[in-house]
Length: 257
Image 1 (spheres, rainbow, N blue to C red):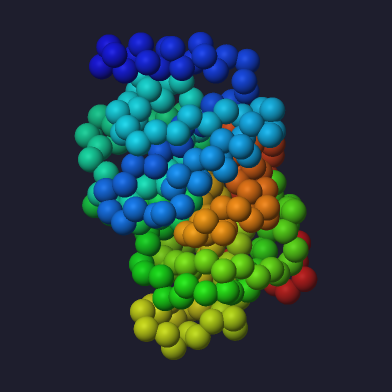
Image 2: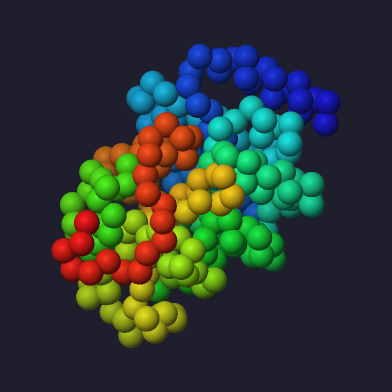
């Protein structure tokens, strides 16, 4: 533990004056995505381009501790499987966010820590299969939030499309959702009878902020400028540098902002 504290202190000193700090965790305990190496480059580049953010990428779960997290303003997961986090580490992560920091996740960040119900509450939903891997139409529900305000009302993208359980619009504000008319709803594995397939959302957790997007499976998405700009806005929002409404709401009526 003392070594962790020294490492954290050294990191804080090394990154002083570089803006808000984000811990990017890419530890894999299940399926490992080929896009992880590229994602590290992209996220670091996106952060550096703002002049207000610095990303530290790691596979070491030891940073999830009271001492390690003290060096950061937000944590961002691109993980999978049942991560080997001790009870103290789990408490540290929840306390970190409740206390006013940020937590974000991309793609398989909902396909992890299944046996920890509080994690599902933190991130906002649990992976429940991916019925489609194809080009789809995405609806931008919130064009005012900093993560999605650059996007048109609808756009096309090719990705692996998730569906979720333990998800409710009463707890999160959906930013992006799938246009169900762009896929085969009779495809094997489709479970949501309500045809509501959220692809990005945000919410408050205690005094902290949470953002998640289900996009991000292939390299091509990480190279997409639209996706990169979403990550930029999300990180600035997670670290409290820009404002954005996270109030939950139902599916907006046609033509609503």
